[in-house]
Length: 406
Image 1 (cartoon, helix red, strand yellow):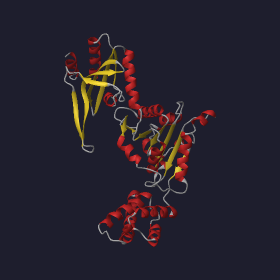
Image 2 (spheres, helix red, strand yellow):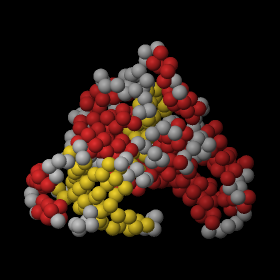
Image 3 (cartoon, one colour):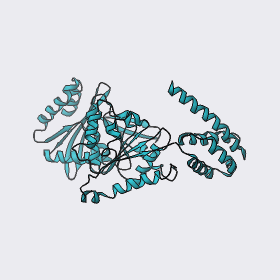
Image 4 (cartoon, one colour):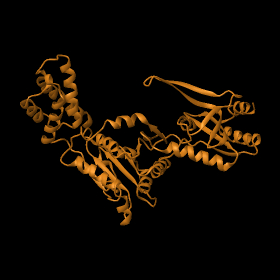
């Protein structure tokens, strides 16, 4: 009952007094126990227990507050601990763990206290849980709002991206794959010749020409841990602190792929120097392959775009030329059911009329035409529909360009 009373009384205190008050009381209640406390987000006790690496039992003498939520997509109920006390069995040791949370502004603080027969045992358990939760397994680690979160849905979408369904200019696709394969298989060579085992690639090109698909296909093919940065901004931490968190996690996860999509929007005058120092300063970044993308290379500082040691290779994703459009349209036509097939003459017409189309617009041409064809289901009608759609999309492209210029 002392724990029940402790939780109740602590939650009535000012936010900055809750953790200290509980720590003080726990030391008094358990004078012979070793105590470890903190709010590290990687200490996810319930995920660790879910894979049977430890066993949890709720303290039956107190009210344990467990929040129940419904996942409509997965049609599944899941539970999340707000305030609870657990009895834990781990590697023959018995531990008592208190988990609590309270609101601070728009954010929620989640705090834990680990009590064991000695502080060494408490620390070993803490490290084991954090290490396991830090590993990237069939998921992507996404950084946003100042913290890392595992994203299984993004990983599943990446699994559908391959180079088989991607057409790029010339040997671009092969060159990029060869670059990454050589990096991840050449660690001993780098070491033998005293070359830092790190690499930076910069993907440059206007939107819709395959940069994102290429990144996803690389992650799928390389089978290396992937860390994806959405933003360095957060409410409570500075950009510099968040950049430090990003590279600290990347070094811990190496060998890995660190993705900085739209790097021109991630960097500012204030955070650029700190970012460059983390990317290419005194700290070792062994095993980190950084892939950055940009639609606006003119916005990048020359220290990023022109200095080879930071982004060793720059790959340009251009608008598809006539040969690439021919291959792309032929690929789609081969996927069509017989009633939708285009004649060689129609393909040549569409190839000629789509000059200036990005891959995204070519894809939209096929998808929008297929939707309209489904309304007729008429054999041979696809050619007329697609030629009509080319004109519609061309007009859309022109109006979008005018809007941007204005």
